[in-house]
Length: 208
Image 1 (cartoon, one colour):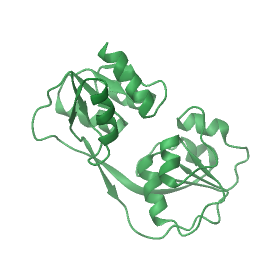
Image 2: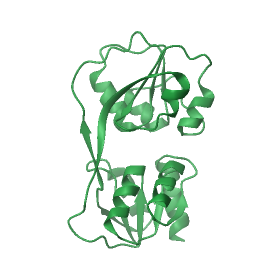
Image 3: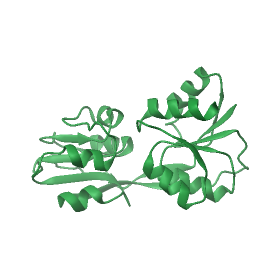
Image 4: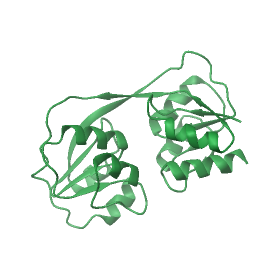
């Protein structure tokens, strides 16, 4: 089975390796690219909590931080690892899951992430928002051909819809599935845990 991997260039290697281990053929087809939004130092020392909800956001924040925050909340284990550790990783890797486990009141909070990211945490916590990068949707140079496509973000789902392809999709989580549905993309399996292991398990279910 040919499985299209749509993650950004340089970020698809581990997923591709896991797909090969399943006996399938991974086809790298990046549908999104990550663009940094600056190099200015980030001083987080005045915040009680710093929140990151993506690996890309964690990497960018780590690159620009001038001091270790008092406490860090990361949406998942991979995001925490990219930042060098976290004080809180929720059991459910969504903004809702993270919000449910943050102490109340959370104090002064900084949300660091993508330009245009969901504002649930910002709005509910009255957090400051720091855009560190933007996600750019790409148009592949040739038509997509495969048996299954893996969508690991809402941006990838929207970009995939623009190709006009009708390959069944596997989604990393509810936000990606919702974006795919709005764009007319058929999702046949959604990861139960919103991480690499969950994505691989969903591929196994979809591949039948």
